[in-house]
Length: 556
Ligand code: FBP
Image 1: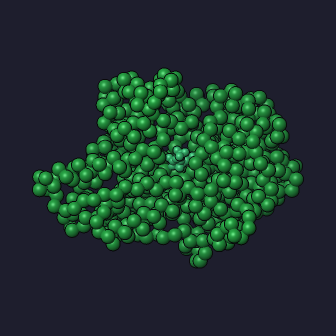
Image 2: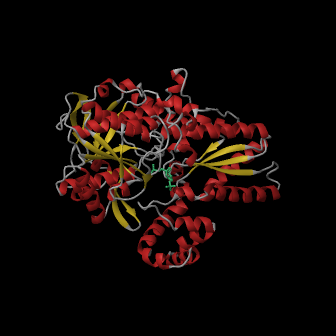
Image 3: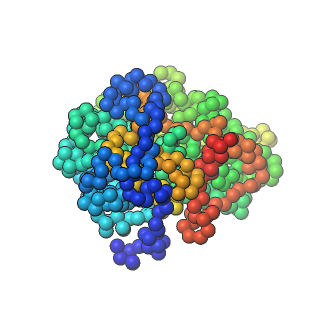
């Protein structure tokens, strides 16, 4: 890349050296075995589905000499799976450097455009020059990404064919819960048909939900939430300056509200909705509208006709009046898949689905704007509702406006109300990784190679102590089967990694709950500003409040 095709920041970031714990720096380490942990749900069923890879122990990287594969040259494949998250290129750089450090004859092959690249054996060699162009950059464009599922006998056989043709010792799948589930299924298959390809997952997703006791954070969450927090902070300042709009900001993050919670803690908007809390209180859409209207009225009474309200992307899935409807809809989409596919257009598909739903669900479906009805007809390849396309912020604005107008007519609202909707999502997925994400992803790649060298398969790289300095981070592996549960996707029970939802008893939510009343009426907005790459470490190496508050809660 010539200097005139890259920005000054791009150029400066190419030479950033990620921080890592001493144990990884040597390039070779051993693993120590820990306890065997049980999956969160039906362990008998998971054991039946994964007889070869079930019941393996947790492992931790420790000082040592390079595992069962020693320092023989390896050919390793890497595939980026699902939505982009800042740091993906550094995960590849970490894999590359760790492989070369142990044996310069080792190779890293990048499969193109997601899992289908593995199935179709479409790849590019990761060379020193290629890796150098992408170090510390955002995006997944070095090899592309995709959301394909690896599940059917044909898909698994296609992956195995690629493994044999390419001589792969291992495949690293970089992804979230669905992609790491792919890794578990493929690892089991390779063991069953006795091919030597190991399969290792790295925890990626801006959503922050690919996380548990052994994986403290998924990569990308840090940068994405800082990017959204900067934008939300700017909007808060605009609201306070112009004093004429209510900004309803939907934030990406899929089902869990981790992104909304972190951004709320960083910016202190007038209100932030946390879906998990609504679920716990069995609240409905109209309860949400009432709570927002209450804040607007109270602010109007203190002369403030402006404000900022943060809405998590997955809101609808948690509301009492939507949950059973969405469940039934998922089942019907599975049952009616072929009939729906045969219909000519969206209108016919909507009508068909409507006719198949129970009376209650049909009523909810009909009550939704046509655009939302159409989005709900779609599922991603893993069977997830495509929540990023549901314009819930607009629906909320519509109902809040109606209510405010009715109150004004009755003389109960004397303020002014003008609303603007925003959706911050894709803006946060491909930014330059923060130092945390640049360091973390590089280490994840490095650690992934150590698991491969130890001969492990069906593991996701685990990471502990992340609130502390990089020197103190602890890496290891968690067997993927120990994270699997059964979920109904389009009418079928499938093994999937249990999504980690925002914990109402956890440090981040407790802090939010203790502070939010002050934020509602007083304008105590915080303005995080841009991610800092240069300057004092308290700015460049800051941790998310989620990590800090969770670590503090653990210590108590
Ligand atoms: P992953 O779970 O694959 O990391 O993707 C995260 C995400 O950014 C979600 O927050 C969002 O709902 C989704 O991807 C949107 O992606 P798409 O445009 O492919 O539906």
